[in-house]
Length: 135
Image 1 (cartoon, helix red, strand yellow):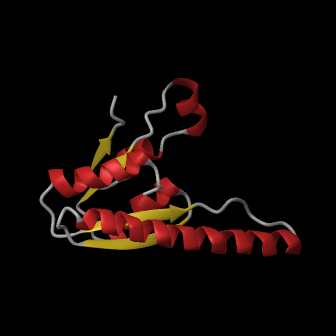
Image 2: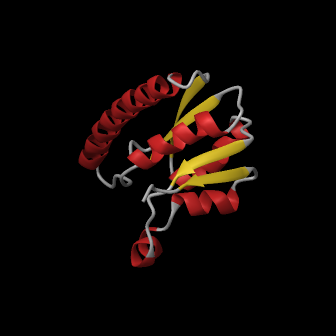
């Protein structure tokens, strides 16, 4: 869950379209960049601490949203490349399905930026449902 309306919609679909015992809401912190100096390391650590606090608040918000659908929710925070972390979490969390939002990029934006949803759908060892933006 990245805080976007797309991910919120994906959570709604996961809670209403699938019979499940539990939904795991996963947020991935992608490090901004590797620090090459001590000053950058201090700044980077402070930056990541701030991002972690924001992520925890976001996960709490999503858990409250999902509670409206009367489905047990567990939140998890991972670090690293989003697609790689999501695929890795499938095994770690013993997930049987991934529901992920799509930003609906196309053309050059998709080529340049890639698609986390597309990468997850190709690499995950379980079924993946991609929730596209409403038109």
